[in-house]
Length: 282
Image (cartoon, rainbow, N blue to C red; front, side, top):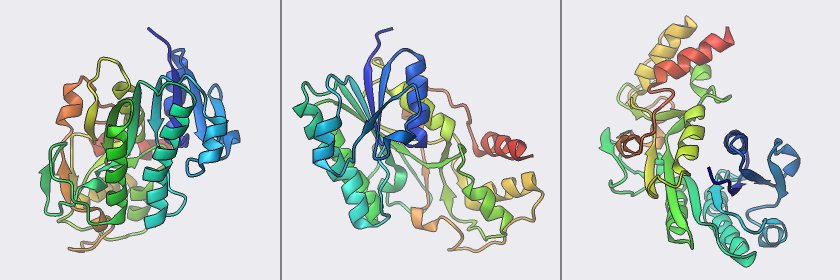
């Protein structure tokens, strides 16, 4: 296997887990984040801010073969998303090209928030993207920049990530919060996010757009009822038109293209993932 110099731009918990997996294969992995002290070994820390072109120009390593762009906004508002997903990527592109030849491949982590469908429709990579909120709008603009850059661009649109410390649904059920029986949700386990990103970085996997979700888009109440059973909690009260995730849009996301590349999910549905999480708690 050919080893590569790989930059993970936005090296938080997901990027750190991915970086460790890549380093274990012998790749030289750089982890970029504002607080470089939080980049775990054996990754090589890079202290820079994606929204600060000067810090990037001074710190970005030369000769990078592959880049993962896993940004997190410092503010959950319109400006924060624009800076993280569009300006940050443009700044990184300029720094990488300024330090030498651009990388061969860039993988941009996006979200199913780019879809505006809200009636339980099935969506895939060919579906219309008309986001209704600023989150999806700026993610979609970032996707365009990633696919138009001086590299082979890939975009992965993840559903709601759970596991790896993300226990949002467990807490909702424990607190007796309501669910919306008419609202479809889509999710993917943290370990599968790492696996998908690792897989899409392979040279034999076609570039382009991929939807990163498990096999089982499900109504919000079905998921919360299952978790309630695992936790020995009462089923959540029903609240049509309300509940927890309605702002994300009700849709059913297809992972058919991703699976056609040969990726096999570690957690095909929420049942395997949440059962493991509850077992670990006990």
